[in-house]
Image (cartoon, rainbow, N blue to C red; front, side, top):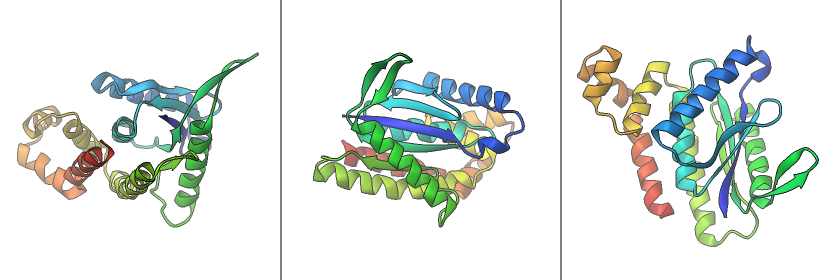
Length: 214
């Protein structure tokens, strides 16, 4: 059992230059993998505006996708579907194709994330679905994780690009003083920004989930 991830670009048809957007997206994904390499298979473009990845566990997937959310520049967003279950590759004339219940669950999850975004939760970007056969512990973990993701996406969606940079820095363990020096501002200014956007709540929530997932 692993975590299959399907991602697509939010509003891809309205992007003025899809090539530039893809390069900036690739740069953000590569940066996250350098800072914290958690993916078994990092997000890679497949067809159209879709990307696919595989993670060993839910903790790694949620941490990495939060970092990607934070690393993306203004104007570029990703929607994520996470599927918990078995994945495999099937050989075909076009190469190895992703298959298995983990991928089917990820497809269902990204469809649900899209539906929530279009309806009651416009900043929703991420959802998790377990493939059939998950035990009660994993079902409970998925439910709690989805509740966290609703809050997480709302908080990140309201951040400015600088606020996302600061939060990213805290996620990877940089001090507020280090961030202040990089941004050319005072440490109290960094602290105030992080408090205003709820950055610590994001980090603490992820740590609390880590304990539950473990």
